[in-house]
Image (cartoon, rainbow, N blue to C red; front, top):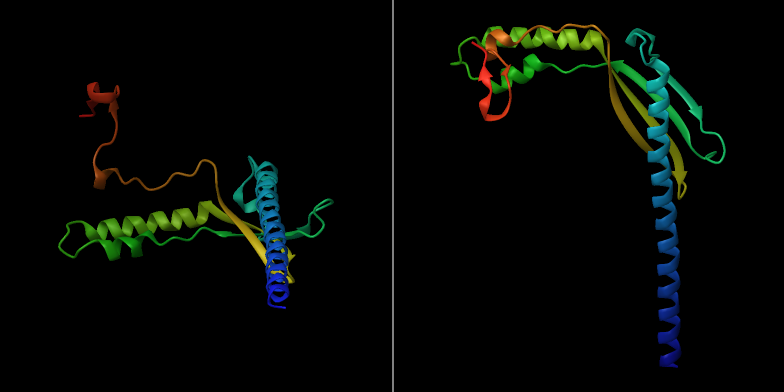
Length: 172
């Protein structure tokens, strides 16, 4: 009787282990497929907007993947790239540093230029696994061609030189 109970308990544990393993395998497989589909959609998006202005990039698009990936859909959202370098500099610079106000203003101007000339595009692949919604997202930045940003040269000094390695000569 005890031996029979041990066999039943072991059988249940083995069966549950196999079921869990198969569910994990299916979940992993779907995650891998989603990452592939997101990369593929990003490549298509890159090709579609190559050489075009970032103003041509739509704020959003949605759709479903064709067979054999019917259970997956996609969502693309774009927005102006926003990163306040001035606030970052303010938090990093001490009040004693010379030119800190000028640097902060320059970085704020750079942030504004970036906002107007860079789009942040997020591609999200959606699917259901184990009756729960899942998603996988990729984000990429698209930059307007021919945009010039404010120079940082007066604050960081001359950059560059001739040659390379140890024999290079700095600019004078």
